[in-house]
Amino acid sequence: MRKRIGKNDPCWCGSGKKYQDCHLELDEKIRNYKLRGYKIPPRKIIKNQEQIEGIRTSGKVNIAVLDYVAENIHAGMSTEEINRLVDSKTRELGGIPAPLNYEGFPKSVCTSINDVVCHGIPSEEEVLQDGDIINVDVSTIYHGYFSDSSRMFCIGNVPEENKKLVADTLESIQVGLSEVRPFNRLGNVGAAIHEFALGKGYRVVREIGGHGVGLEFHEDPFVSYVTRRDTGMLLVPGMVFTIEPMINLGTDEIFIDEENDWTVYTEDGAPSAQWEVTVAVTEDGYEILAY
Ligand code: MF3
Ligand code: CO
Image 1 (tube, rainbow, N blue to C red):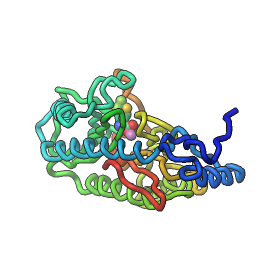
Image 2 (cartoon, rainbow, N blue to C red):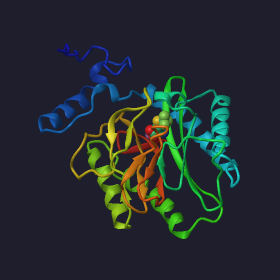
Image 3 (cartoon, rainbow, N blue to C red):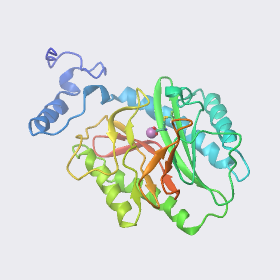
């Protein structure tokens, strides 16, 4: 049993403000949703202003690292070189690359080329070819706060169909973001992305999704992109999570590399694209903290 917080007690969020001047009103609203059967966010994933600011600053490092990759990526370089760029830039800016040693992941960034859906491991042997599409997924720990975002890069002369997949996947992020506002439900974010992708003739990966982020690398909720409308967790101000759909030109079936237990491929070998943003739910909509 949790002892009820008095309205003059300090708020549970750690802001230092009186409960009645902080989260009391929101809690009452959330309680009403809960009584109506909604899945509601646990308190530990609702961030206060100071924490949002910390994640925002971490996100600025993440963005700068991806900008640096964008300036330097080119055909003929190995994915290990991308790893070195990400590692050195992150540390130069005072951050730590979150993937390194995360559950045994051996590198500082994920690099996923063509039919690799996600969690590609940088390697000296893997060299970027003209016509490749690649996702570079960067995650930063800065002063204890986590941010996570990824971008696609088209290397040289990319087939029109693949270029379009990359552009449409970016657009799907905007479609998802249009559903991010307080007291909407998370399922609508995924449903909007799924409907958009299916409408373009693509398939969306079901097994892997986004996640809460900020105080840890991966927090609740799981963010799926194949959800139904009016399902899923209630969105409330202070929640921070990623939107990172993986959209396939062919089948949505995938398999995991048995050698490294990380890298995810499309079953049919057709290309897959992914973009990722870290987004905060605000009082009246959303704020992108990393892209
Ligand atoms: N950035 C990936 C994500 O979006 C991280 C995967 S875990 C790692 O969740 F160890 F591979 F980095
Ligand atoms: Co992520």
